[in-house]
Amino acid sequence: MENLEELLIKGDKRAIARTITYAENYEDKAKEIIKKLYERSGNAYIVGITGPPGVGKSTLTDKLIKNLVDVGKKIGVIAVDPTSPFTGGSILGDRIRMQDLSQHPNVYIRSMGTRGHLGGLSKGTYMAARILDIAGMDYIFIETVGVGQSEIDIVKIADTVVMVLAPGLGDDVQAIKAGIMEIGDIFVVNKCDKEGADKTVVELNMMLDLDEKKDWRPPVVKVAAQENKGIDELIDKIDGHKSYLIESGTFQERRIERLKMEIIESIKNRLMKDIFDKIQEKEFSSMLQQVIDKKIDPYTFADELYKDAFN
Amino acid sequence: MDRPIRVLVAKPGLDGHDRGAKVIARALRDAGMEVIYTGLRQTPEQIAEAAIQEDVDVVALSILSGAHNTLFPKITKLLKERGADDILVIGGGIIPEEDMPFLKENGIAEIFTPGTPTSAVIEYIKQHVNRAV
Image (cartoon, rainbow over all chains, first blue to last red; front, side, top):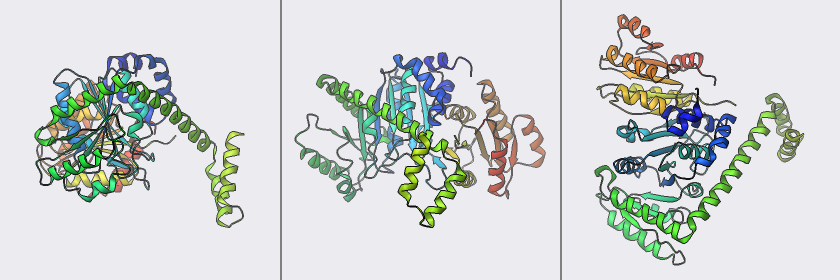
């Protein structure tokens, strides 16, 4: 595409799409573009939408976008779904719930597969967020895969993390409290028109009250996303969290943390690529056979590969 | 580095049967592709827009309503207008043989009718995808 950079700055959807493709395939072109346009980034507010599978993250995101475009905001969405660890394939279905808005000139939605990355995001998410930021988005929503216990990468990238739950999870709320309860800046009980919603709200509030050390007590918001109920309140809470972050100085701290992570991720990705690019398939198989035959052990094998890659 | 082929599986028009589309989506996933599935009752505009935003290599259209002669060419036309005619567009469903030449003239690369093994679709995509994988 000609003038990719110029089009990207203008927010052209095709230019954004192509640049994100470069990013998720870890092609150098993505880095080159970000290097040139980095100065322009830093203006978008990044909101993470996370929670267990089936609680309505995509529907909620759809309604948030709708309410924000109505007041003239530009929105970028990254929706992450799992990649099969066996075939490398994936079905990315979050877009189904966001169809109405995807044609709006101020909305860009991209589905990404995790492609082997653990933690609830995909390998290219940092770069993709940076690209949407450069393209002039006011808000970037990142919807994680359905989370269980350890998919907490979203904390490292989002300014505000919205943890979405639904009634009927019952003991699940208990089960997830160790890993997941700590990462939400705002808690949403979605499907609040369903039985048991109030009980879930009470349980959440009780658990959140146990944590007295925090300066920010995460609010619990009742939402029925499908009916567009509670969305305005949720947006108010997101804005409220943003004000808190800025006033307390946490905003800057979080952003510095994110930059650190972005740098570390970039090194990691490059290292992995360099090492695996240099390993020859044939060599690997023949050495693997030696490990199978117990002539060498897996750790010696790994050390050898590592050494070879850097020589 | 190898990258997965990205495919948009879409159902244009008004028929409410998506079993075929889901079977194809699943088969392509199992063949290692990234499948963006957008659900039922999509307009040509929605499909073209999704194809562009998702930067897919392939658009696979499924239709059973009989409106293929209207809807399919509309989608390829919209893609062309946006400079995205390097995307491979294929179709499947209840499509009479006599309609096939017209559809092919209008940018649909291949049509798969009921009874086609999913492996044939996978093979076709792998061989005909336009962008380097």
